[in-house]
Length: 312
Picture 1 (tube, rainbow, N blue to C red):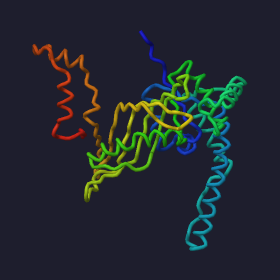
Picture 2: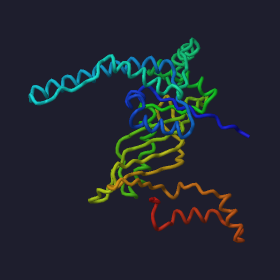
Picture 3: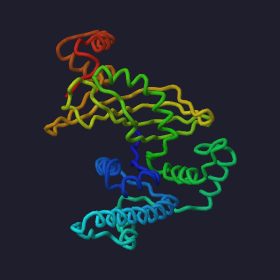
Picture 4: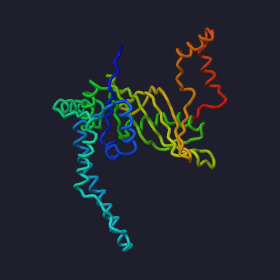
């Protein structure tokens, strides 16, 4: 019997930073997932070092913009009240405070000489995530930390780096656009992308991906399907040398949106619904049905007059 390993979600530096230390958007959703799965968050030292430096730099720049805006507003009108802005010191302290808040969820990975040596070897040999004319020493160091975590956990790496995302999106988009059009939606830009990568010993990486697009209703005069998103889950092979995607295997697709009353809705394609054949057979056995031709169910799904998408 195989024992299920604990999930470790490893956000890249750009995810931490863009989501304000996992407080908003993808970060907030990630923390919800961590709680639901009783998972942990991988936090390599190299991410900590880079993230803190970037946090302080972005904090200073944002604070200066706020001061400039305040000065402009006060120049336009004397009635504009003083805005109570945080100090640089308080914003720097906010980083340390947030790390303490997340402390029980974090699995720290110290930067070791072995990580540095392994990363350097990957850069020299053009092994992923490095490659010809793409010597990503920092990313490769994170990869070494991820491999260490993978010895204990089921690691899921989440990044805003669009290297994988753009290639996978370009490969799956034509088919997905055609399918969501049948539900009268149109794909827009990428909202989030997560990937689990496996080395194959060959130039390509085996990827398990979750790709979410923003979407828009194409129904005429439709104002009741808001904040639409299309999420595609599947697997493929990513050629690191040519940056191409092949062997795409879609596992699930979902459209979600909210109506003007705030109710959430979802639609899933009937041809990707996974039926529990064993349970169905057991149910049919109870009513003395035998020798079911299972392919007939596929025909029924494809011939369903209600269309491809099942809404709820």
